[in-house]
Length: 280
Length: 341
Image (tube, rainbow over all chains, first blue to last red; front, side):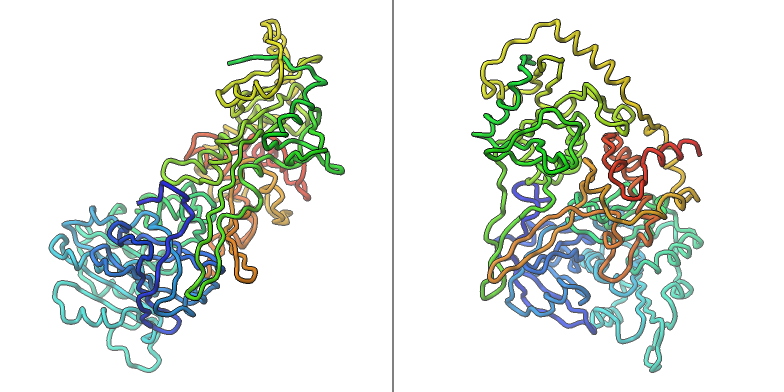
């Protein structure tokens, strides 16, 4: 797990196996370790993140999108938005970069076992939740019902489109997709904000765990719905975003009250952060 | 614990002697300021001074340091070396408040899960020699309010106490005792000096003029993340970061890359929670939107969050931020005001 021997800031060399375009300015990168190590030994859990490191450009915290049940490659889904991600988008198959990690507390897969799981994702929030979603599907018999709610702003911005379409053929996952706007009238499912999907779902809050990841504005409204539906507070987990620089609880940037997003999170049980006013 | 006596006029020479075969970081006169600097030939360490402008955290946690170097290849930049250059060293002339700050910083850099090898390597190889505050230097000193004492031994390997005509040298740790042989022929200290020291310790404590209820405000902080009081402290703040840079316990940093031609380096630099960029995410979202939130963070971190996590207030009462704030924001007043709410 944590790099406790040697230098904690020293990143490991990786290469890009392939890049898969997602939507405008979003790509999925498949990575291979170049120091002889294996992803199995890397030991990542769903919901953890890595510091992606490009010498000359810097480092950025990026969530891991692939589950530990699929170890051919480590996948990261990246939005082109800053100095590092711009440099990453200039790279191609075979390019070398570095990563360090895995870091942080992931989703509570042991707690979820045997229970219904409601995954609620907004926009790029699907990137970390996908690691959990695929994990649940790969160990399908360990979990009860799986429900995915995913909202994006418009039909052009649906991430992992083909994987989501693939669920249409499965009867062991319920899926509810929404878009905020559909100006061209092409969207066949729900149009409106993601909380509108609650009206279409039959939920049994007391034996369901809700797991959230999305933009900051989403949490407030989704939390209100979950609590009013009767979800116990300890059945709600959320992945938070902060400017995480060092990833190992030292640099201070990602402080949320007395916690650090990088080491105490990024996944927090709601019960841990409900009293920290600046958390959400 | 070994005790020796050092003649007052011999101390500077002893320190200079040590600097011949070890790195010595000591207070030196630098124009109008006293600053901690690496002692180089021809430089005079100050043994009598009020206090330094900068805190000596710079020695373990430099304002800027190279973490690693890399070079360009055809397939991308590759790591050339991880730079870890800690050498045997003496950190001379720190005040007891500063020595305590290292004990607090150890909680961060030497935590059980992730070790900061840059900090730890320097820390392990460095002997800390403190000069007790027989007369606390400033009216802004408030160490006794935050768990310290002007003649505290905490965090030091060696403590020197000015007894008037001689220094009493207490070698507190094995690392400190190893320094004895480098100090030449020192007389043993007789027990009468202990009584003298105790006397001075009592008067030093009484000479601390400034007292704040630092340990009393946590219950209020626990319950008042949102309170109109937070609107009253930040308005004059320029977000210059002076308080955080001079603070012996502030440890926030940034990591950046710097490239020159074919080579480059990854560097660590001090950062400050007073800056709006500190929490700015690449998406443009900023969880702390104004100086109000940033000031609340600084206060909360020192007097609540650090207490929650490590059981101590993250302030050693040196008064650096009080003396040097360009708009006279006084953390003592803020704490005192909160205690009256």
